[in-house]
Image 1 (tube, rainbow, N blue to C red):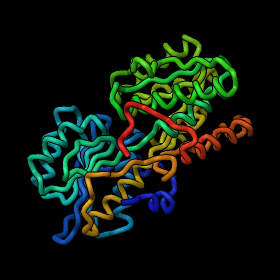
Image 2 (cartoon, rainbow, N blue to C red; image 1 turned 30 degrees about the vertical axis):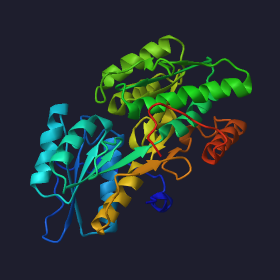
Image 3 (cartoon, rainbow, N blue to C red; image 1 turned 120 degrees about the vertical axis):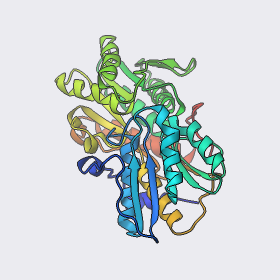
Length: 355
């Protein structure tokens, strides 16, 4: 099944509508006997993480807008212990489609899905390998490779950095791509820009150990700045807002690259964000829910993998940095996209989803 059409139609304007009209934790848009119910469980990052939970909810909102026979609601998990009961409550409520958000929910989703084989599930950023769970994954290493190259080209100090929320595949895949993009810049330009915060070979690096604590994100990025980094890519959900807000307050001392949702549309820190490594989660979720509501069986294999070629991943516009990014560098970043999509450049990561 191809979902690319949704990306073309919907574009990559992800916005923050879910934040502006954030509903109650268990928001029910209505309940008619013939309605198709799509019910979402957030991970601990919460609905307003300006990241993948926000994106997934946006996809449900867009599905409802396209088909008013769809009801949507969500429950926010406060702790990992909430995952199983939150999923179970939606099974008991006989939701037609239950969406789990985030790789942290993979184990709980697998357990509940196996216990309820007739229930239709979907998951963002995970693949439990269960027949009744439709996985939506994203090869963000490809777009992060572009971002690493861009960061290396924009750095004045010759040092850039990245850090994650937790060392899990949906996080480290960004970090792998980023450092490889820096390395590619060094190879093609005969430069020696350092990538701090992540070692792809050892899979060791810097982590905030939380997706929801901005002070922890700021601590990690403060350490990277102290080591000389002047561009930082946090892959830490809401914790990364600690980095972008500090960068904004630094008066240009350092800048950032955001992830998941265009940071200039989802955060107040656009002036410190060069670009965003975007996952078109809204497009994937919208298309999946519309297909399910139309009676289609969503196949667990192959599921959906977003790439540069199908616009499932991308880098966002440069916004406030548009005039600051040299035209030559912009052209090189665009060429990298074309080369990766064509297979001329191969981007690899241990965390890449199977295609």
